[in-house]
Amino acid sequence: MIGKFFQTLWASGPSTPLSRYTAANGVLYVVFGVVVYAWPEVTQLIGAADFEAGESGLVRVLGFVMGVIGWFYIMGARTRSDSFGLATVFDRVLIVPVFLLALVFTDTVDAGLVVPFAILDPVLGLGALAVWLRTRD
Image 1 (cartoon, rainbow, N blue to C red):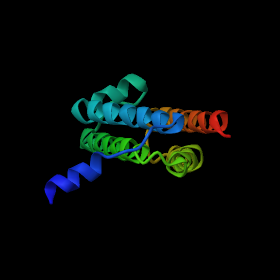
Image 2: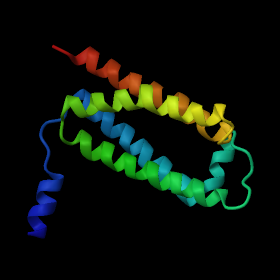
Image 3: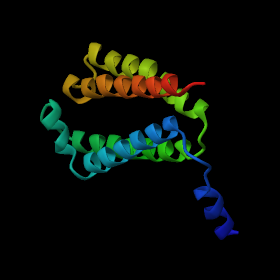
Image 4: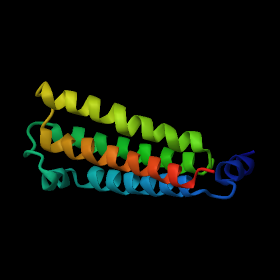
């Protein structure tokens, strides 16, 4: 039973350019998530203010969440489904910047912590869209 679970989990078909791009983005998210989890002060290198109270713990939670998102990108890419890759375009180009920038505009979160992600995520999403458009039949 457990063997079948892992056999099915790791099974995948032939990769596509979009699935490879999505998996690479997943690796980026996992690596950055692990770094942020292990060293939350790294966010200060991209412009975040010094931490107060328990903020470093919250940043570690964000690192953990980024790592989990990366895992799902990697595993979703293994399905080789264009619909999964294109779903990442939608959330990264529209949802992520709208909600992150709303936090900045309401002065809820330090801009230095979220603006880099509000820029990087749409760029990576547009990259996925470009890969898909380039490889369409």
